[in-house]
Length: 82
Image 1 (cartoon, one colour):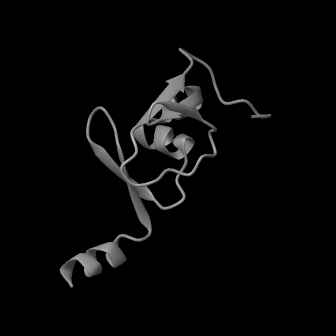
Image 2: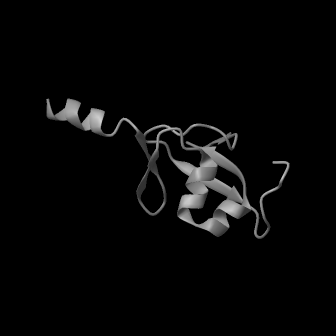
Image 3: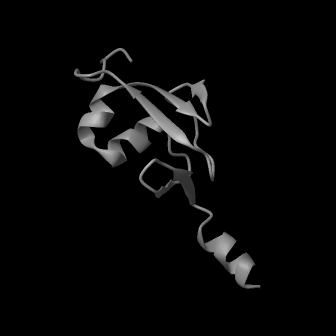
């Protein structure tokens, strides 16, 4: 019963793993959302992402327990055509 309560309570969130810790995001979060949550500058410089070691699109929907790595330019801003 407690486990059912926990799963229902957190249905709208996903947990992903980072080098620093696990982070919690709204269900439907993407690698770009993830990057901006870590740091605004990182979000601006994001050019790609790997999830569990595989390159994914930036609009990929993150799932519970995945390991996310952001691929970023050293400097720059997001493309308006991106």
